[in-house]
Image (cartoon, rainbow, N blue to C red; front, side, top):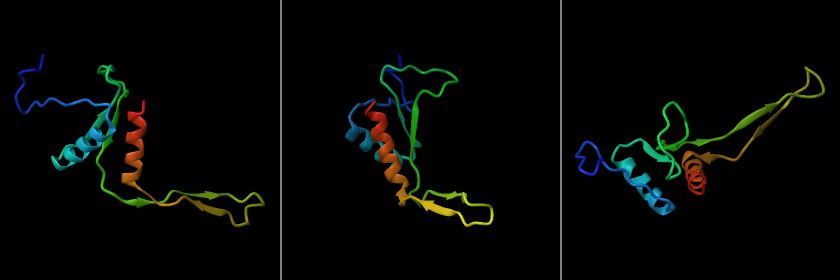
Length: 103
């Protein structure tokens, strides 16, 4: 149906290969595109449903997830602060891409 399509319409490749997906992800960032759509190959477009995963380019930033535990001994006691190790946005995206591609 779109075999003869001309720019600005472009064919988007599909792959199950993680290395190819990573290469496309990096290449598309340089082209100014937003990211990739990850989905099973046999999944069709479904209007008004969120059935595909969009993996977007993000600027890297280190973040720490923190939480506060309310003290059990009473309202005038001091609670405790909890945090995780720092995670980069790139590391989280890489983990998410691997998870989506693994099915």
